[in-house]
Length: 159
Image 1: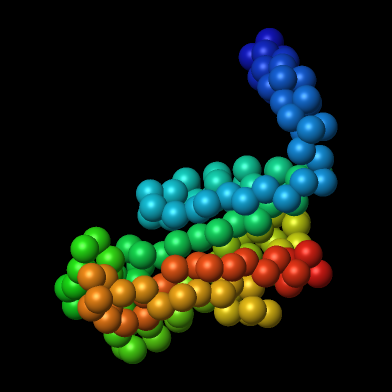
Image 2 (image 1 turned 90 degrees about the vertical axis):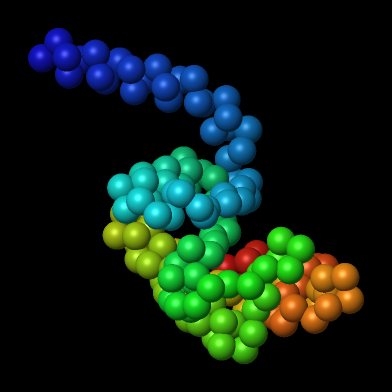
């Protein structure tokens, strides 16, 4: 009983400490970069999604931007080629990357919805969200590699 009360007091303390931030960022869009080790451990995945869901429930407007590089590499099934630190992305790799990233996206949406919050998955292609410029490495064509030149957030605002 005393231990339970201690836990409740600790949680109350954390909430009191967080209150100024909750008030400051209430109804603000925040971007959460989600990738790397956070994606490779199922328990860590769930905890990150729980935290993002909590942000939504206290009034923030979180947007998760996720990766999937390790999963893409696993599905490609061949050794990736890098030129000056950039992965060469051919037609086959691009097709696999889109498939994997769409699956990751839908899995994240499902996790959020299982916690009782509505979510939508969007690709950078959707609604012209991202505009990119083809990138070359020392003049060498490295396939479907680009640099984001413009973000058109209207599609996100509409959601």
